[in-house]
Amino acid sequence: MRRLYFRPVPSLTALFAVMLALLIGLGVWQIQRLHWKLALIHTVHDHMTGPALSLRQALAMGIARAQYHRVALVGHFENSKEVYVYTVTAEQPVYHVLTPLIVEGEGGRAIMVDRGYIPLALKNPSTRFAGELKGTVRIVGIWRHSYRPGLFTPAPEVKSREWFVRDAQGIARADGVKLVAPVLLEADATPNPGGWPKGGQTIVHFHNDHLGYAITWFALALGLLGVYVLYHLNQGRLEWRD
Image (tube, rainbow, N blue to C red; front, side, top):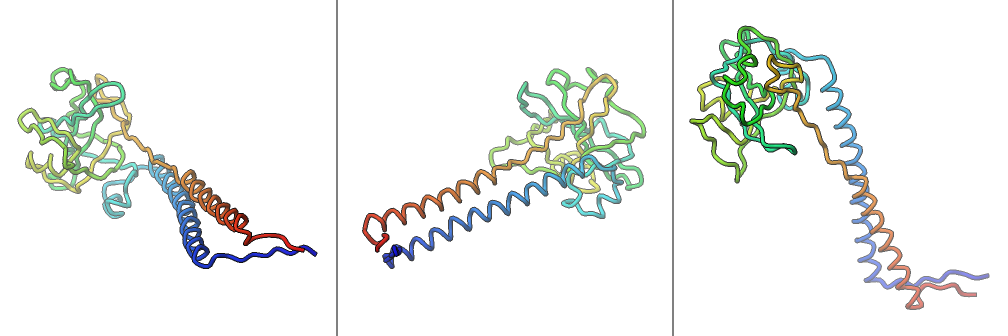
């Protein structure tokens, strides 16, 4: 009867075992990350399509947990304190109009609302007068965290009210506005009078390459196993004998 004889090289086998365990471990970790990412995408979708929360409900959840929830606010815009955040889209450069909404019942404190974008030529409010909402309004939008300037973010041009990052805290501080919370509310796609600003600009895009990474790690593990076996075959340390 033919039997398989295997005489592994001890040092090589020890190294092989460590490397194989590492590659398999990385593959398993990416599978776990895949399931986490799919659950995150599902949760965000549920938040963005569910009933709108009140401000009190959002604050009770906590800023982080309320991320991507729809939230409804009632108050009035401080249009004289709107700022313009320069952004380059796939089509053209635009401004996002950020305006503090003085929230009803919050003692004069505000939530910073990203009302949507306008073309650069419409920066002057007089060119879109109808869209400068006055009086008490109800706004529904997506609850988002505020952003911070990065190392290479240009400094704001305060006189022309131009900013380069949606830094709710920085914008509020520059205008002497007190915030209810350091967040942004990205207005939904409800049309504004005159058509500007255009809301509904929340972009949700999660990179989900974890399955590809997992396949890569498992393929490397399989390749390493193949090299290990071939080496021992070529050295006569793995063979069938009668």
